[in-house]
Amino acid sequence: MERRGKPVIGLNLEYKSANGAVPSLAYLFSEYSNAVIEAGGVPVLIPPTDDLDVVSSTLSLLDGCVMVGGADLDPRNDGFMLHRFVRTMDPFREQFDRMLMDEIARQRKPVLGIGVGMQLLNVSQGGTLYLHVSEDVPNAMPHRDNSDPDLRHPIVVEKGTFLEQVYGKNNNDVRVNSRHHMAVDDVAPGFVVSARCSGDQVVEAIELIQDDWFAVGVQFHPEAASATSLDQRVFTEFVRAAMSFKNARVGAC
Image (cartoon, rainbow, N blue to C red; front, side, top):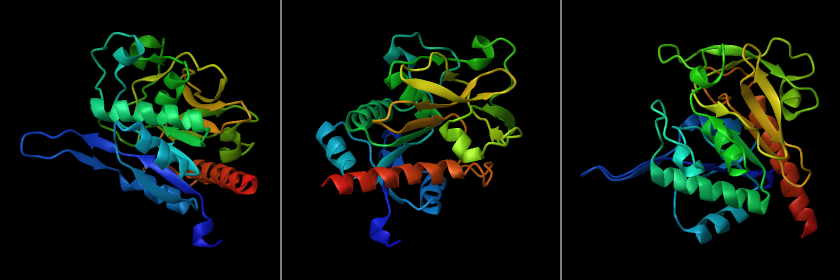
């Protein structure tokens, strides 16, 4: 395939506000862009902005978006109290991420949400979150261990879902990395759970079941060093969906 024929995938950036003499900083962990490239896509970085016209115009050029992981969403933005274990992301990044996700939904661009990206996908479409799994879920398994960045746990993949495309029909021994303390509670309307932690049923993946928009989210991190080569197929299958979107758009022109 020629380079210009590859799907172009946008990625939002982490953001740190200016602090004294240190200017503000927007950046991306290279694992994300490397994973997109490995899957056959062309990564494009989307810097945080509060200009909706810039967001809309940028997104119109893309064939899909990956919403990357990061710190916690501020529950007060969704009408809930701040929990003592919530460590919020920079407010400017959250404002931008929410604007970007709303525009992704409006333009019906394929989207893959990872970690907090999945959580944002869920709340932006009307779902809710557990603010601290160990308190909110009875008999919860450990989902984050600050002393073990390679913590993994088994998941159960639902049949007929995007995750089954990733892991195959014989997926009885799938284990994924785990580094979160918030999780999906009520699933947004139109979405279904495509994977759960087998030990406590915490949601590990969601996907939209409407035909007009490809939207999936995974709580684990398929881009991370602790991911397996099979986990990388999350990006492969997503880039394939973005390619289908690209081809359909070209065909409609």
